[in-house]
Image 1 (cartoon, rainbow, N blue to C red):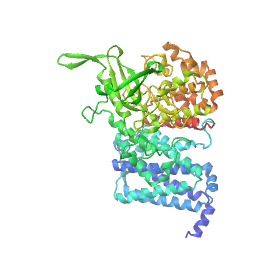
Image 2: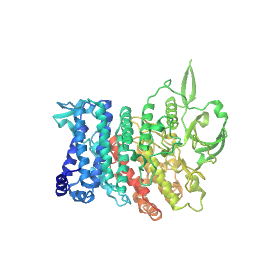
Image 3: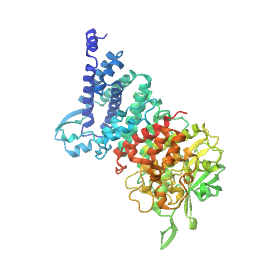
Image 4: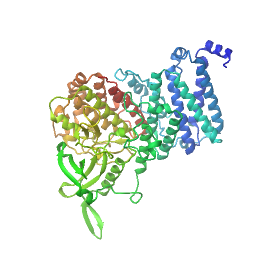
Length: 633
């Protein structure tokens, strides 16, 4: 039974005692955060502890404990559970003290090399050029706030890591990892996780759901910040352990009103063993990222199998009809409806030995194609990508030199209908589809692009011709969605480049001016995909093709002026979007066109930097995805 004197002192002290203990817990977590001499096993423990720390901070934000000005809120919200909360906080603090004795020891004269080693696998370079006050302000926008408003301090963990936390080298006396009793350490972390879950349960159900939702966002932010295969493997282990400790998180949605984290057991993205183990979306995204990273640099002979279709396969592939202005061909393969998407190449002379040469694609281009198709064939591919299954490719030589990527909608199900692109729907004319269906399509497209970028995947061909709909399939008015046009896609890896889309108006109208022409100064960026999404959102609002809205032109100069027209010179286009689709849709669309400025980040920031990538991901989620998801018809 609780001591009556202790309860009385709690009543008199109000929030003061809880604040003291809460601050002590934060200090305790800080020792683990800055500890040096971290090996792989310690890395997993650290990630798990930082995830629990993040959940604690989110609970503190929700109750008012983290902000001195909001302390009176704590007394109001925790009046009934005050004694229980104090007891839980006290045990968390006690467990952290025990854990520090089991896993840390004091260490002096830490060198910079040791501190860098302590951060292995996690990008923590300071983001010097980011104005964080400006960045945080975008989350206060009236167009972002909706039914379940997101408190912008929920970004604490991601932003803390992005800023580099603090210069730990300035601390002459520090802690370093020194694990002793691993069983007791594991038990302590499990108990801390349970206690933190109990704290969350003291909140109302709506608040708790929001906090759990933000926890999943933090995992994705940590994935962005993790730069090595070893680091991602540690993160995946920590994700799974945290999920087992707190099973209630499995069913929470990552995006308000969006896709659930738990996929159907029959989902095609599942592998045999991993399907049972990795059931949440953030786990599957991390697993996919690991496979992508491991595929980089794989050599022929190391489990390599060509993805080029054999002569026997090609005999069973019957081409039926060209679609989408010749970029796609409907076909039948072994009695199943498929389609082929084409990618032209420039022939080169290839030495085949004994003084002989043949004409064909550059071998490096072939390697890129092979790797791309290998990734598109991964079984543990998140269904939220909305990517079709790629059966392989065919190679056409001669005057019509091109690769043909052979796709079908689902690898395990026969599709009874041919795909119809969004461009074809626009060109049909007649009555537009319902406003509800258009909003739903915009929401799904923004969400799919966010998930592609979450695993650092660049689409590079995002346009209405690559958005495929299967009439009569799925539950929506427009049918099942598949995001195709992936023949130019690639992982967003430093130093990696690939062939860009064709420099013509059918592609150029969707292309950011920074990527147009042969004189571009930088490679493809995530914001270029986001810009293309903005053009598609305008098309959906008008229910017309972009070249009809903006004017058909072959001039590179005119194509390069489209962004300026939309933002300053010809504002009536975006005004029409506002009138037709509403303020939030307009806000999301304009942000896509504006790019980094709309996301509170400097235009010149390096998007390959993991910290910048994490901040961009969070901003895109709030400013675009959430704004679209908040629209209710």
